[in-house]
Length: 174
Image (tube, rainbow, N blue to C red; front, side, top):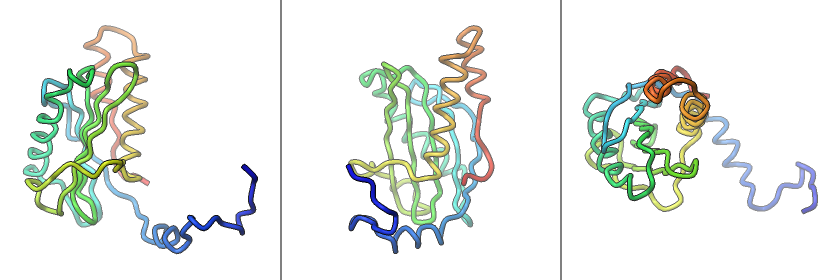
């Protein structure tokens, strides 16, 4: 592969789209919702909120039920029993992400999408859909917390899981 100058962009680079995304980019708020049980898993939950949007108790409970249904088949996917739930009140709709740790240091990710303010209408996202930049920030933190507290952590499993549950990200996500 030859190096090119940045003044010679390949045709697939959409300069207009990238600049429009940069112009509209803003921080979103993340807040921890605690560690819960769902589908036989310990689930560390988060709310991610676009400006003017809030994750309500109804949305949170609906997302937890959705996560429980998804995680209920976790053993069949090699689940280790720990998961992260992101309840995202986005600018263009609602999103729920369920990421669980599975065998061989791998993870399993499910993304659900729906119209803003209608948590009962969340459905599996299309094949290939991946976390947005704000959701990826939470998942990056959670990958590091899992390694730091559970895999590299000291003490009993209960102590490691307590440390994992307390290791959260919150505030503005950039």
